Length: 68
Image (cartoon, rainbow, N blue to C red):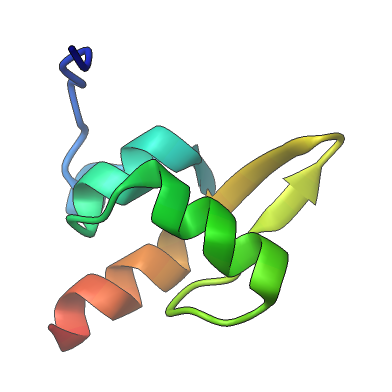
């Protein structure tokens, strides 16, 4: 069973990047899909690597959501 996320609306989000789970929820994809995009280099978004973690730019997420 998945844990429910409390998402901040993108138009008032103050962070510059979001973790994979939050990004996936905003774009209605599974976190595994975003991880596959990061590994294979394709996909609708590209992450920023912070150590061994993936972060996703809020500006990129906003552009993607606005284009849908």
